[in-house]
Length: 254
Image (cartoon, rainbow, N blue to C red; front, side, top):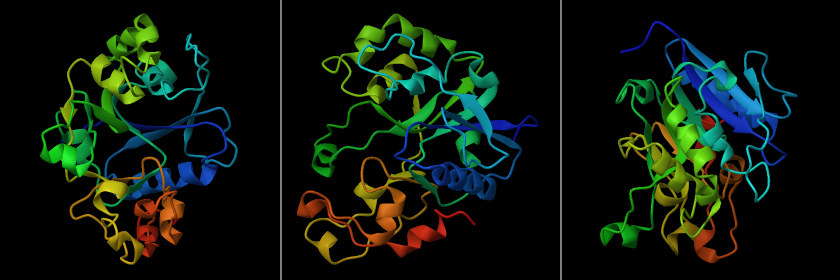
C-alpha cells in the first residue's frame, strides 16, 4: 500500500550522451504514472536545463575505481547510507527508459526488499535454461538508509567489481552485493531490443509493436528512445529497427 512519506525516484546523468531533456522527460513521466507523493532526484555534475522540481545530488568523487571515473559502478554509490539525503523506498531508473503504465507497483512489490530486473539473455540461451541469476540495473529498488551493506561490499571488494573476469558487468556485481534480490515480474519491465524488435529478417520491414502489460520499456544499449522513434540502423542487418512512432505516446515532454 502507498506510504504516507514520499518515496524516492533517482536517476544519474553525466556527460553529454543524454541531454537534460532526457531527465525532464523521465521526471514528467514519473509524475504522470506515479499516484503517490514522491521526490525525484538526479545525481549529476551539470544541472543546467533540468526542471526546477528536480532535486539535484552532486556527482560523487571517485571512491578508488582504477579504470577511470565516472564509471558504471557509480550506481553502487547511491546505496550508501546518507547519499543525497535519501531515506526510505528508492527506485533507480536509467535515463533510457519509457514509462508506459502506472508504476506504483514497483514500490508495492516485495516492500523493504532489493528488487531488480532479471537480466535478459538471447532467446536460445533462455530456452536452454542458460539464464544466469544476474540483474539488469536499468530498474532497481532498495531501502535507502538500510542499504549500506551494498555500498560497503563495493568499497571492500572494489578490485573484484572492476575485474571483468570475475564480474563481467557492473550489474553482476550489484546483484552479488545486494545479497538477496527479488526479480520484478517479467511483464512489468521489457526490453525494446528483446521484446519489440521483430526477428531478422522481419525487422527490416515490420514496425516494432509495444509489449503487452509493460510498465517500463528499457532501451539498454542502442537504440535510445529518440533513435527508436525515427528508426535505427545498426552495424548489422539484424540490428536494424524500423521507426516506431508510438514511442512518442510514452516518451515526450508533455
